[in-house]
Amino acid sequence: MKLYWAPRTCAIGIHVLLEEIGAPYTLEQVDMRDEANLRGGFPQVNPKGKVPALVRDDRSVLTEYAAIALWLARTYPEAGLWPDDAEAQARVLEATDYLVGTVHAQGFTRFFRPARFDPAAAHDETAKAAAQARGREIAGKGLALLGEALGERPYLAGELFTIADSALFYAERWIAVAEVAAPANILAHFERVKARPAVRRTLEMWGE
Ligand SMILES: N[C@@H](CCC(=O)N[C@@H](CS)C(=O)NCC(=O)O)C(=O)O
Image (cartoon, rainbow, N blue to C red; front, side, top):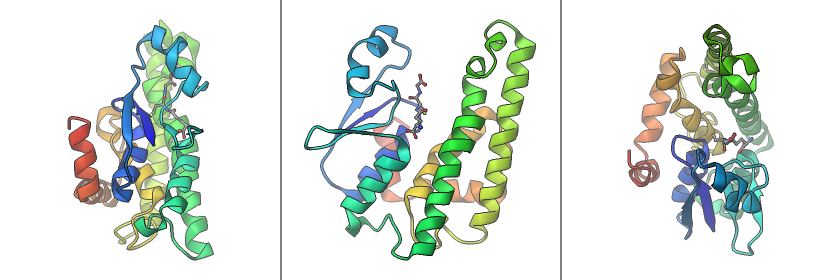
């Protein structure tokens, strides 16, 4: 397997899962600021131009965090990243979808890429600040709701670290830089995940 990744991105959520699983993989860094790369080589791997993208051993490419994460978890069940019962599976998917589709795509992306939501933000500081404030608000509300779902438990599904926790982890990495308000139990979850051996190895590879 080969994971296409870029610094500071959500691709770390998949990298963590690969380390949790322990199957062999390689990494390929994509320079998201390099227009030539984004027009040239990488779109042949993922025409969406986004990381993460996972090239599997049969050379087929899987994109989208939830799809890659679910495939990995189901293909390597011994890693225990996917619960057994239907209720827990539904809750894990519920949290993952909310993280990817709302907290990330509507919230943090609005902060990091405000001009994608309001073209005026490219040249107008007031428009940029407004788009970023809205992004913070969406991400903050999402993290507050996920904090309620997490409660006092270590992980979103209870004792089990799942694909939802890895998605929450990649979003938690943006909390400080985007200055988003987050509940104490979400910040504690971030520290708990960072302490996992697989996550420490991943962060080392990301130079952090
Ligand atoms: N829905 C996609 C989102 C992937 C995504 O937005 N990736 C970002 C990095 S966190 C990216 O590659 N952005 C580059 C760009 O939009 O130009 C997923 O779940 O994987």
